[in-house]
Amino acid sequence: MNGADEAPQQRVKPDPPGYFEGESMTRRRAFTIAAQGLGGIAGAAIILPAVGFAVAPIFHRGKERWEAVGPVSDFVEDTYRQVVFTETEGIGDAGKTTAYVRKSSAELEEEPGKYVAVSNRCAHLGCPVRFVEAAGNFICPCHGGVYDFQGKRIGGPPVRPLDQFQARVKNGQVELGPRYSVTSQLDPVRARDPGEFTGGIWEYLYPPRPSTFPAP
Amino acid sequence: MPKLRVPKIPDSVVPAPLRKPAKPGQGGNGKGQAPQDLKTSPPERETHVQRLGNQAKEAPVDILAWVDQRTGASGFLTGMLYRKVPKGTNWFYTLGSATLFAFIVQAVTGVFLAMFYTPSATQAYASISHINNDVPLGQFVHGMHKWGASVMVILVFVHMGRTFFFGAYKYPRELNWVIGVVLLILTMTMAFTGYLLPFDQRSYWASIVGININGTGPVVGPYLSDFLRAGPELGATTLARFYAIHMLLVPGAIIALIGAHLYLVMKLGTTAPPWMKMDKPKVAASVAQLDAGVEGNGNGRVNGAGRSNGVHVDGDSAT
Image (cartoon, rainbow over all chains, first blue to last red; front, side):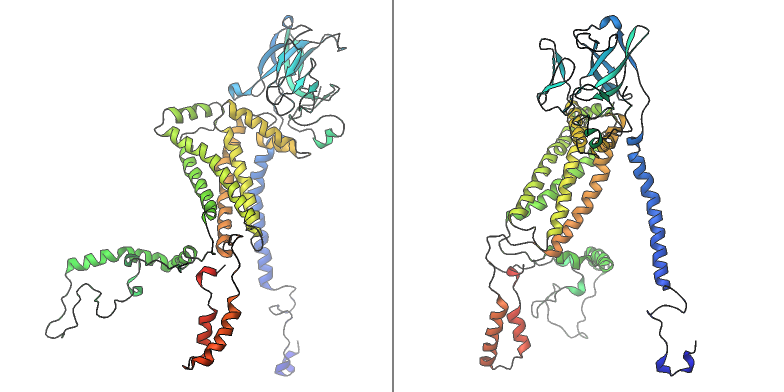
């Protein structure tokens, strides 16, 4: 630097002020960036695990659970039998759910030798529906949803047929397993919450959740 | 309308140097005697007991002064509490404070309910029964919390309606409206999450329906309802989750946003009701009068002094 040789009033000033020779940024700026960066890392180290902890259940699928609900002789083709079993463990009665179970019917062109377990959870907003024997329909008390014998919607606000539970026979007992939803043609899809359409484009608008079991 | 006066602040909270001296001839120290010759009759010295008494009298002032000197709170508080409000301010303007009061009731009763409540799916209902049936005043405090929740929701809406119909959301108060809307949403979140906590049939089914309504949102809905339930079904952790949201997460956010809301109210002031006519622009008129007045006055008053009289906006019309 030859500034000393020049006239004093011509002294070279760093531009912008505060820079030292050969520096690309001021120290103040370097420290500001460093401090903010470290603060951001420290903040993320606190926030991210906490948020992940709260959000994790979305991605967690519990253990598959099967429960015997009665001997095969209990269930017939032309009407339902109401059974109560535990869907969620650890919370007592609140974890229980109701299903209406029958044998698959040749009249309805269903695969023979199977058992059909219709959930009583209304596909509108999740109220409990009741099977009315005289009408052969499921009727929801909350907003008047009506489903036919197979659980297909025939009236009211529900958006899809009633959910079903996987059913199998083991040691002469009918066992019920994970829940699944069905399309309007009763094709099984992964379980959806009430109020969510199934089938077609709705499979993308209401994507399947990782916390549910694959459809049978 | 009489001019609003700052009420006289009692001497017990004013530090001695700031107290107004007594007017001459009235005495001020209670003795009320004319000054005497100090040599012939020196003033009585206060006794030890008197001095202690005086110190005791000064103690509240000293404590307040100590705090005030270190916080500067008195300037802030007088600015806040004696701020000017527009003409026509009426009972509708108390709705915000009423909502704040409702929130404080919820906060206080909620803290005490938490002392007896168990956020467990198997024990929650029993603990609420215990509060209602066994704990002294339990049903009363629970009732305050339960009915106070409805009161708060109603007041929030009435307060919002007042703001809307008075046009008080307009410039420069838009941000306060936005904060208010967030507070409305948080209040609804409180109402929703609190509903599950008693864990009776009504709570259970209302929460099922509420979560399922959340789930009907496209794309994110299913994940949102899974988040709320902490799983695919309403389970053991759902209640704990609702409890944490209800008593930790949302109240903290509400308190912070109420602070911001009030700060903006203080900074921006309130609006006059829409039926109040705007005051005539006093400045121009005053200056005109002033010019006329100074010529005819002739008492040697400088222009500036007169102007400060004329331009000064009186308390009523400061908006």
